[in-house]
Amino acid sequence: MVGSIGYSLGIGSGLDINSLVKGLSEAERAPKEALLKRREDSNSAKVSALADASSAIDSFASALSSLISGGTLFTQPNVSDTSILSATSVPGAPLTSLSGQLEVLQLARAQTLSSVGLASSTAAVGEGDLTLTTGAGSFVVTIDATNNSLEGLVAAINGKNAGVTASIVTDQGTARLVLKGATGTANAFTLSVADGTASGLERFAFGPTVTGGLTEAQAAQDAIVKFDGVEIRRGSNSFKDLVPGVQFDLKKAAPGSLINLGLTRPGAAIEQAMTDFVSAYNELNTLLSNATAPGVGGAGGPLRGDISIRDMRRQLGQLTSTVLNSRGSIRTLAEVGVRTNRDGSLSLNAAQLKEALQNNPEGVEALFNPTQFSSDPLLVITSPMGKVKPGTYTFTNVVPEAGGVAASGEIDGIAAIGSGGFLIAPPSSAAAGLAVQVKGALASVTVTIDRGLGGALQAIRDELRGRSGPIAKSQERLSAEAKDIAEDRTDLDARSKSYYDRLLSQFTTMERQVSSFKATQSYLEQQIKAWNSDN
Image 1: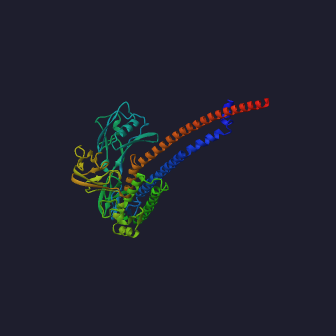
Image 2 (image 1 turned 45 degrees about the horizontal axis):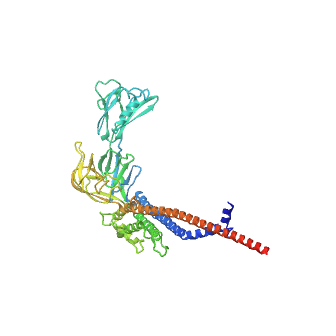
Image 3 (image 1 turned 90 degrees about the horizontal axis):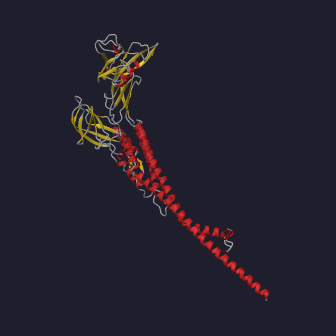
């Protein structure tokens, strides 16, 4: 043990073996360590820059989409008295004109019935069948020993999903059944029991010939309005089939009060939005330019040569020439003064934009906003905005629902899926996600879907950030590189330790030999000295 310590301390040779071995080992490792560090730093910078770019395109697209969904870039209807009614634009339905006067004569109401008071909500109501008849058909409500109570009757009626809501109202120690339908005379309903029923269930019947049954607290009635003097009835106080692109919500009846209708154009909002868009785009372009800048000796941007960022810049660079409105005379951003500069940034000709807003406000508005258009009012698009790939789709041989047989038709030659009065594009169709309501027979009709600028940006973002998109592939590649670096570092650690151990072993062996030589030298010197003393 003492000898080993002596060797480790360099007693034999006088050298600091540990320091010497450590220094030689570190010198051998240093260039490889420096290379690994450069790879780590480069990969970390790429990961960070890619995350920044991905977040930037997401924020850019989301901000514009939020602005558009807020409705500030839509032409909005206005009314002269919002205490009587309100009017809002219907997303996806261009509003080109609105004028005239509306008079609200009567609000739509829902039929409401109530029963006599029972002792409690658990009181028996009588067994038997109660037939609920609505505009949608007849529904048999069965009461037996398992649900013979007011609570059971309420649950049984609500379980039919017939458009009539049952509830219990407690008043002055009694419990009453209250039934309420939907607004409009078409949603009036009756309840009947078999002739001769005397179980107590007859107390919950209602109809023109019924006596001793439910009491009608409020009769169903339609909303009645006059539009430019023409009387119109609707089953609801909210409707959007009177003027294309406008939803009216009636608040109170006001016979004799004429409400003026008009439009508010979003010209100023669009000018500001276009300015903000160009500014935000240029910030994104600068970020991407810096990240992909070429350089010599590693001085360039961290994402130079990255395919995902190159693809992002390519798609963003095409925005000014992308068709955003396939039906209008203004189809691209370039036509309203947005230009792509040589460095990839955008510039806005404010005068050209203002002129376009003056000459064709609907066309400029359509560039921003998504639109869905059917060439025939008998085919109504019901799918939400943004669910269908942009394009023009042709419906042929369209037949409406009749006699319990669902609507039928084809979309670009592929059979559509019929569901009641609706047609749905099959998943195999290019129009997947498209749903329409069929209101009449049609030989041929076209549906045009445009996403607008917000939708176009969302499509770019979704493609780039998808699970199999360019950004995901770049992230996978960088993750693989980080794993390779970690493995290389583990290998380097193992090789460095092996080299250190080998050097230490070699120098330890040398120390033993030097110590041995010194011992021999000391012995010889002592012998020679002894010889000299003898002489």
